[in-house]
Image 1 (tube, helix red, strand yellow):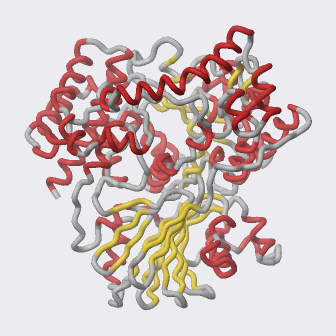
Image 2 (cartoon, helix red, strand yellow):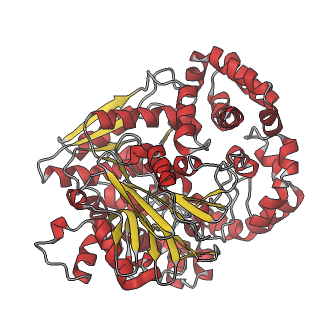
Image 3 (cartoon, rainbow, N blue to C red):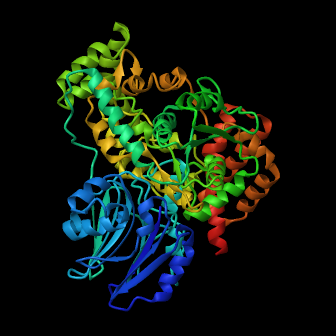
Amino acid sequence: MSGIYGIYRYDGAPVDSQWLDRMRVAMAFYGPHGGACKIDGPVGLGHLLLEVNPEDAFEKQPMRGDHGLLVSAARLDNRDALLEAFLIPSAEAPQTSDGHLVSLAFDRWGEDLCPQLEGDWTLAAWDARTRRLLLAKDALGNATMYYHEGKGFFAFATSLKALLALPGVVKEPDRMRLAQVLVGWQQDGELTSYKGFRRILWAHAMTVAADGQTRSWRYWSPESHEPLAYRRDEDYVEAFLEHYERAVESCLRTRKPISVELSGGRDSGSVVALAAPLLAQQGRGLTAYTSVPLLPPDGASGLWFGNEWDQAHATATMAGANVRHLPIDASEYGMIQSIESSIACHGGPGHASVNSYWLEAIMKATAENGSGVLLSGQMGNATVSWEGNGYALLALLQGQPAAALRLFLHSEPNLWLTVRRQIIRPLLRPPLNALRRLRTAPSSNYREYSALNPNMAAELALDSRMRAAGWDASFEYSPLEDGHPYLFAPMNCIACGIGAESAARYALCSLDPTANLALTEFLLRVPDNQFRNRGQSSWLYQRAFRDRLPAPVVNGDRKGLQAADAGYRILRELPAFRDGLQSLDSLPTAREMLDMPLLHRCLDDLVARVDRQSTANAGLILLRGLGVGLFLRRCAQS
């Protein structure tokens, strides 16, 4: 996607064009096809253009509307509906950019425009009458937005690098955010690795007033969607495929080649199964990239398999002859190098450092083949392959007696499992979980998979913060709590934006049709009994794709483990890992933040033996900890 940036001097001082230049240079990779900026009194807005869809060639931003300046980075799924709403003649539609539609939406709806926009977008709009700056981000998509409030000014950008380039800003690590990375807890998703620099959450908007006061609100929620009541089970399958196919088709507007990240699993597999036939109708192909192990995938065992190629290739073959399937072993990428590259791009360490190398390799290969779009199925677990809650009592408490009855009668394969899952578990699990939480501190759980220094955890009062937020560090959830809306909570928004930022470095647009808003809202309305039947989870998905994908993929009998050869990859760089840990031993901020002896033990365990447990610890403890340590070292050197 394109990028945007800007400054609001609410103290009345003029906007310094040199500040805007510094921001533009820092995030120049967002604009391979040009850009511009405009200043209107106390506000300066900038745009960096990435042309992906045909209408992007007519993008002229920032735009001046009825209220004032507006800038956006947008790829709209409901583009046709907006063209009709604004009475734009069909002859003019091909030259009407999505950014222009966003500007028209602000003219008509003002600060209430957000629910009218579907797709991947982020925007900043200046209302010269009220002297308020509006910032907003899409409900589910890949867009990003960071902001920082300084002395008398407010700055924003789709890249944290742009904000860090402003003169005089203090670059101090945010220890709470780093602790969240280490324990796998996003909390609210707003913090970044630097104090005073924050994210706008998905489905949120905020305004900055003339006195510098800010107001933030959530304009979309996964809660309270009226359940559907179709007459036949088959009606749900047909409607699901209609919504999903439209979502995929909306991502194929570009005239450039299209690629996709393809695993051996359900979500990306379903994207390929729908995208390939649609592209074939246009005489176009689809390039699918699958990460494969370079070294023995000994990190996988049991129901997990470490080489996803065979299952992914079966998906690609079944999808159509226009699918070109290529393996990516990322042989030229080092683990430490990829983590450092990710930190440089995103301005901080991430939870999934173990996947950095193969993700970067796929994006590079995609860019080299001339693709403009890289598809994924990242949100699929929450949408298209949602397994269902599967509890009759929960459905009854939600006011869905018909769904509750069907779940009780048909969700399990036999009477014993019905009694166990539908009666015993819902009645006993909640009080037992509550008792365990009272008697067990969260730290007793996350210490098993985290490199966080216990002294730092105590200083940050992490246990009490987790309890206050209702976070269970053991990941044990109540059968009487609806887990579906939780997956759309604002704290889960970070990963999508990280993908968009990474893609921007390679002049790519990262799109996820499983995060389509209309598709998501439809699935949130589907009653739970359509997701679970006779012991089968993801029952809606299985019925929809049983003739479109290989049976092992549809059934989900085994799951692929990406980066299953991470243990051996680390050993391939053993001297560099030893040196890296030793350098952190001498860095005071790293010793305060990290359990350095534990990091050394994780590496020693790999040297002794590479297996499922040592590889898992390498990903959760060693690589996360190393990412935090490398970030702290970068801060100390700046």
